[in-house]
Image (cartoon, rainbow, N blue to C red; front, side, top):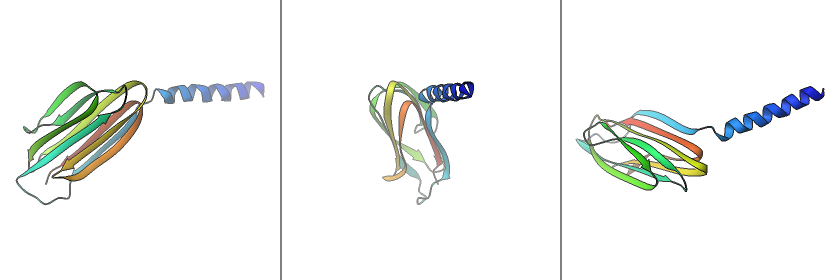
Length: 132
């Protein structure tokens, strides 16, 4: 009986250690968003990486291709004009030595299409959609 209890406690301790290093993530591919169709759209990417978070990220540029940024911290924002039918994607991976918070928002012509908050030591956020 004593061995069973010790084994159970050890399993709990090891699983909590594994959880403390786990990545907190959010990922969604939304498909075509529901906004009126027009020739171009103003897309605003926003991210705010809390204390100690350092992020690598990629986002869709005006050319319709992904561009990568390294070692971003604090508040970050980028506005791009994208053509109708463009596949839009924002991906971030942030790490910190202690638990911190990352806030993410994407707007299309002023309308919020994604808004999310993650917290932890490793944060991964991906959001993709198609413009009409």
